[in-house]
Amino acid sequence: MSKYYFECTNCSKTYEPDKIYYLCPDCEKKNTENKAPKGVLKTLYNYSEIRKNYNIQSIYDKMEYSMFLELFPVNSIDSFPKLKVGKTPIYKLDDIDNKKINFNLYIKDDSQNPTFSFKDRASYLVSAFAKENNINTIIAASTGNAGSSLAGICASQKQKAIVFVPASAPLAKLTQIVMYGAKIIPIKGTYDDAYNLSIEATKQFGWYNRNTAFNPFTIEGKKTVSYELFYQFGHKIPDIIFVSVGDGVIISGVYKGFEDLLRLKIIHKIPKIIAVQANGSNNIVSNINSKKFVSKPSKTIADSISVDIPRNFYLTKQYLEKFNGGTIQVCDNEIILASKKLCTNIGVFSEPAASAAFAGLLKYREENTIDNNTNMVVLLTGSGLKDIEAVRNTIDIPKAINPKISELI
Image (tube, rainbow, N blue to C red; front, side, top):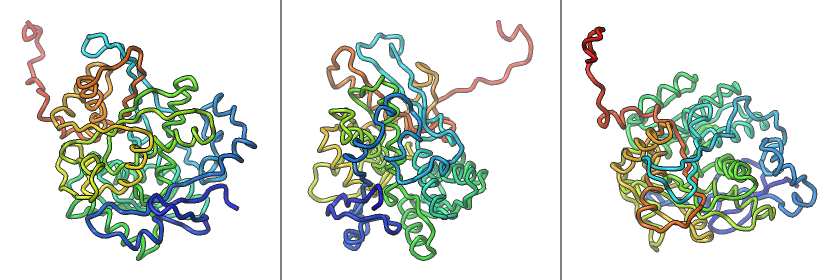
């Protein structure tokens, strides 16, 4: 019997990993175009046996992936890429714009990953699984970050990466993909068009697919951030976490990590997690309380969270409802302002999709009374250097001067 199994988010049917699974076979048949897909699989473990036989104390003592093998669908630490993924820093802010704050604000900076984004956590695990199962070609659809992540991680493992991207994706991200040696396939269309074509290619050619939500191990890779936060907070959990949301996989990964710790009885509750969406791409937030899912075309400066069809809608909805999460919408101007504030207050330059989480924190602060010493975490998911064009119109670079001291007077 395998140490893990899959459970369908919608019908609750379970599957042993006797072959490669993506969506629940039963629910996938019922999916229709322009609707959030059903059948996303959650990876579960025998938590009671792990607690009985595994050295839980090691989770308290070290933050090493080797300590968590029982909570991953891989068997050897040697299967993971040699690149340093995770263990990203947290920075504490005592004030915002030189004004003291009454709560404890922490920035978790995942732009410190090898390809400068949170997506490395998912690629890291997918690549390790592929290596153990003698899979050499991995494909993905991406607005840029997941693609550059897959390309970089695969390069380190000598695996072949094929990335489908909308042709409008930021040049810096496309450049990364090409530089890592991956095969890039630009699509005349949206991210959703690229996503759908990659699924067809998986079925036609048998390539292993890393797509967010489609491959259940993307959530398993992303959950590692919660283990790290637990460790970095001295074996405690923060009170509130702000997460930018597009497809809903990152926020589900954050929930899943804490849910694992909850099932192991290491923690006794889950933090309040706030889903932050751009109001120009709010297809999760706008449908949370709706009986019928309705997709609206997305338009936002935050390309990494610009999604018409959120592929992980149902699991995100379940987590937010079960664990009393919250939602916030922010506009593009608020996102750019948040990016500037991050730069000037802590020296971290984040891309718009990441800055949205900080914009959510700023709006939450305006609209709510926050108790003294509340521990608040903002999860930053990508570097601003990946999308310089997004902020180009907001900065003013002075004209060049002659190299004379008189010109400085």
